[in-house]
Image (cartoon, rainbow, N blue to C red; front, side, top):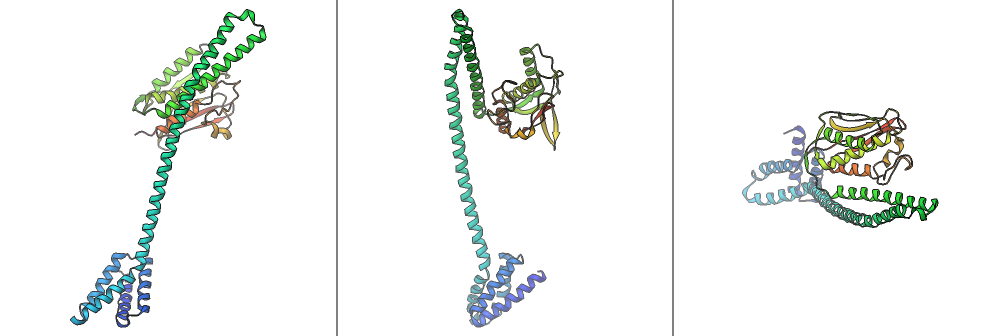
Length: 340
């Protein structure tokens, strides 16, 4: 037993003896003070119980048999008062624990409410987007018929208006398709497998080259880049990132696009870099919000939904996505995937 504990023990025995003799409130107050100081000094309930036992051995057992019962009652009353600070502390802990449990229950209910609301919103968005496709196809189709079969009956201004209608309907159709994809991403179950991202990237670049055969772009794809991820969802990520790199290098004389992997702070990190238009980093927080565009539509086409889809997929894999860029010097998009 340490010197500190011995000191408390001596004081305890003296105070107990005083209480047995006087049965007074002063001695009980002294017991409470000893208990409070014991807590401050780091003594626990078990330590105080050992002191009580030592006191019983010293004062009660050695007493005359006829007085032992009285001394036991006195020692018990004294010990109750001694433990009051510990009891108060325990009650405080219980109250805090109950409050914390209540807060946790409330947060769980709020989280469920938010998830339910998000699911309803996603279902509503999917339904609305799906229902809008049919009338848009009709607008585009009948506009095309007017242009092809009634062009002689329209003047130049009329034909221009029809072209504007077709362009607007096709642009809206692309927005709807992107919204539907964003909704599908939120609802799709993730099935992780070993994905060869290098092969996926090559397939995407081959498609971009077929779509724009007039362009000559220097593309570097690191070999053997793999990840434990959902193959379909990661293909969407790379389609958006590589497609953006391809698009935003359109005005460069020496367009370059690179896909690879590196370790940042010990974490496998995948990236797509380009030397294209870049963007102002002060606007980077807007990048992954739906419908946010950092370049005018007349410069580079797009709906502003692709990066929001990328972020949602990456987050669903437990990773994060971010970008670095400089205006007119290119951009780099990085993402991580939490392997489960």
